[in-house]
Amino acid sequence: MKLSRPLSWFLLAFGVWSWVIWITFIKNLWKDGSGLAFDDAGDPTGYFWVHLTLAVVSFLLGTIVGGIGLRGVRALRGTPSSSRHTS
Image (cartoon, rainbow, N blue to C red; front, side, top):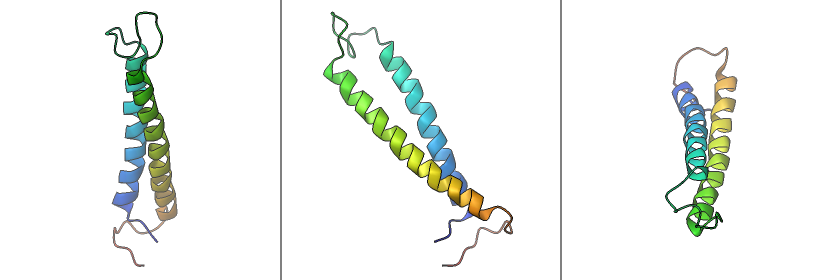
């Protein structure tokens, strides 16, 4: 299967976007002072664990999707800039 150039770049950008968004979210979660992520004793709450799990899964999926996009971009290097492809 060949990916088009626009689709390859979209997948790569999505992977990068996923990392940027979730890294920012984890930083904010870690610094949470509202009591959602950590209880009064400073221990992580269920909210923290659920959102940490979501972030880890999103990192993995973003890495996989971005990797597919990167492979598509590399495979198209040196080909004409047409977005048409054949199967």
